[in-house]
Image (cartoon, rainbow, N blue to C red; front, side, top):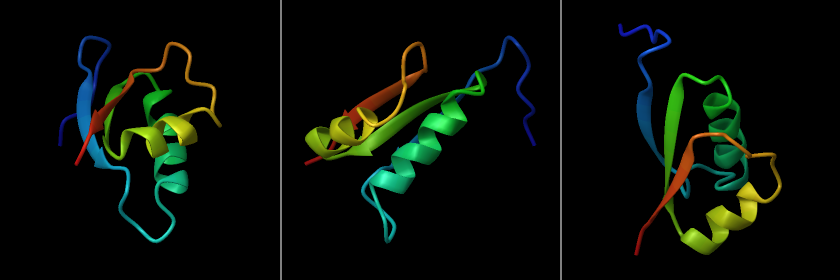
Length: 70
């Protein structure tokens, strides 16, 4: 298992639209994970919905990006 160091950032793609309570709980978990400083989260999903959920969280300087899906 890869353990991140200060030089290693793990990139993780997450289906933001999946799950029973997506995207709200998925985005919340992604923000929490990205705030550790060891992960770059790519949220894949409907851009407008994901952006709306991200507005509910403090995401300044957190490595999260949205990958729009069709």
